[in-house]
Image (cartoon, rainbow, N blue to C red):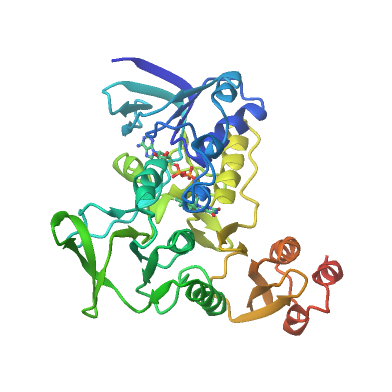
Length: 413
Ligand code: FAD
């Protein structure tokens, strides 16, 4: 048993944790920093897992956020393949899966989340996958064979991105979605309808308003999935299944240690938990934003919270200040979303003739609170600023491509 300690210990070597470690050094932090991760790979980008990495267009090395040398040069202690099993706040130490203990001065929980599993009959059959980490994609990729039937449970971003890669590979792809439209949790009906049509045009079958009751075995191999049983009685033949039914934040360490929780580890705008020596950042953290408490699952949010936590730990706290944004790549469609559309009362569509795309603006009481930009990269930059301003703008102007977004900004700056 090796006992160790660091001035700042970060649990979770994902995007948030690794970004924080380097931000600390950039801000002049001179103490010891340890980054402990349950995964064996150096911190890597997850977004390509359902896009270019799944498609085999990039390698593991290209996923890595930084190489080994960078950690050595920055004197960041990297502890891979180590799971923290308990947090003992009174002794300010962690227990690890191998029985060792790790003391901390300040602790940052950057534990991310895990795919939501379906507690349904047959859910443990082989050939049923989720997608969060490199080994998930390594396991699924050999099944991406022309002619195979892929059923995707869940029509959110990950489900749709995998559908786009798979149908291009010649698989027969069917998406089963409980809601009446795809992307129902994050986007308005106009964007959902656009993406549904794009997938259908590519050959994907959408089965909306449909739940899954279980999975049936393959005839001849009872250990392998052979079908998906829908709640309307339909049986869909399947060679492989992807369950893309959302994320469960990893809050167990915090819960067992008695930290305050909401829909994640509860923190303030400085990423501070209910314990003064513990912060939480990234997908696992629930924080105040725009008058609500939210938990965001995006790389820009992980990066922003890493910046905030580094500022706190470096003694010059700067509160969360970014407008949240997100992207998704499907087929030739680049989606960039900014803001949170909760409570919007109007959707305004603006065509973008130069790039063949469009923008959906979400308005609440006349103010722009969010925007989805499809193949509209320059508009996205203005949309970001309009959302940041909370601009009160005439819907007719927003919808009219002859009225430059820039001019709307300038008149209200
Ligand atoms: P994670 O990246 O989940 O990292 C958490 C780490 O903590 C993991 O390595 C985990 O193993 C480790 N850990 C957890 N518990 C313990 C423990 N007890 N002990 C030790 N280690 C532990 N975002 C976008 O903005 N755009 C996209 O297009 C996009 N696409 C995505 C596609 C996929 C397939 C996935 C899975 C995610 C995508 N995201 C996208 C989301 C984005 O990747 C996440 O928001 C981001 O990775 C969150 O970073 P994080 O560090 O908070 O969590």
